Amino acid sequence: MVSESFKNELQEKYQIKFNNEQLLEQALTHSSYSNEHQGCKNYEKLEFLGDAVLELAISDYLYRHFPNMNEGELTRMRSNIVRTEGFSQFATECGFSREVKLGKGEEKSGSRTRHTLLEDVFEAFNGALFLDQGMPAVQHFLHLTVYPLIAEGDFDSSRDYKTELQEKLQVNGAIDIQYKVIDSDEAQPRFTVQLIVAGENISQGIGRSKKAAEQVAASVALKNI
Amino acid sequence: MVSESFKNELQEKYQIKFNNEQLLEQALTHSSYSNEHQGCKNYEKLEFLGDAVLELAISDYLYRHFPNMNEGELTRMRSNIVRTEGFSQFATECGFSREVKLGKGEEKSGSRTRHTLLEDVFEAFNGALFLDQGMPAVQHFLHLTVYPLIAEGDFDSSRDYKTELQEKLQVNGAIDIQYKVIDSDEAQPRFTVQLIVAGENISQGIGRSKKAAEQVAASVALKNI
Image 1 (spheres, rainbow over the protein chains, first blue to last red):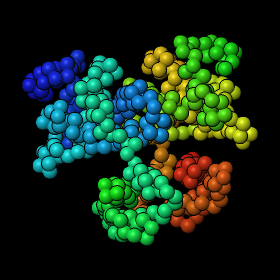
Image 2 (image 1 turned 45 degrees about the vertical axis):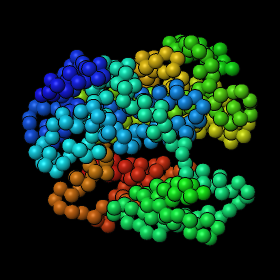
Image 3 (image 1 turned 45 degrees about the horizontal axis):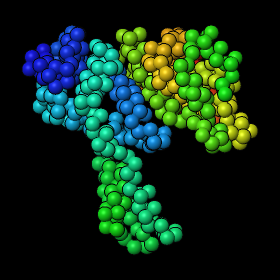
Image 4 (image 1 turned 180 degrees about the vertical axis):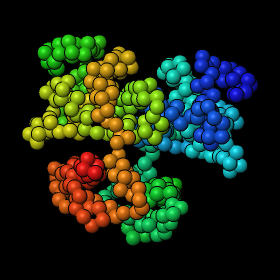
């Protein structure tokens, strides 16, 4: 059972009281736990729904609050928000990390603080809240958690360092800019990229993708300009 | 301007009357047209929103109507629905194809009947309807268009013929199964795939992707087993 203190916290901090407490229970039950306890539902289907609930809630927020952004900018920002580890941070702040029920093996292996698990729980919680009380309740919850960080620019993808660097360097005409992978480990994955401007080594970047490493290299170069 | 006959059709067939007709206008305006006509908004931002609107509406429908499906099956079915050419068919049926405003070049090159464009228009229309009247209106519209086909099993992804065939053929141990592209026309696109089991030609399939052609070949083989 979900603890009374957690339910009180939900109500005090977020004004959330579930009509159907089984939905809250389910949103906080990992499959490893339901496998060990018959008749118990896990959060996977709520996560399926919650994923779409968050996608729309955030799209709607972005559409209304960033009227000057074009479709490409909105899409990039949405994907920054829904595809980052940000949700796991909220799951911890909201106490979901403490309350989630895990099977014995998962508990031992430290899944309770694993980002991907916490992201899933955050999605599932929003799916459960949507089923219990509809979109307005989800939006109220997001106004107290996710939206303030969007407004502060935490997910602002318009900071495309490569484009910014190119614009700065080419202000007086074309200049040769190259990004060269100098080391890669596909298994990790980990890529090291060297930025070369007009034949000169300028900076390096490391990232989980070639693209990410290039962005890091460009951002380092920008700081040094 | 959107034609009166189209507006009447929307009202008669789908009981839809926009409060803000500019949203309907915008949903039916391609960027090639707005580029040629200053002060005119195109549908791209509505498409961004409509994409998420459809994702949630369809997720919600699947969650409620297929209680026996697990998360993986629901996710596959959702992606079959939102990532197929199905939406373009609805866009044609609903008359969007006739009404969409295109620039001169796009009109000449036959974009009016292009699948990807029509899918975008369908998303944009649902985005506009959501902004104008909220989710219930979108759901009413989908009840008259998309949902009946889901209920009929048109998007049922649990029918993965390749896996089914493999399981049937390998019931008595491993057997060599190959899918070989014997003809392809990337421009169309159109792929023809030959299914070869233990060195023997069994069946062929044609489809818009290699994967789709393989599924067809497998389904033909299954019928003959």
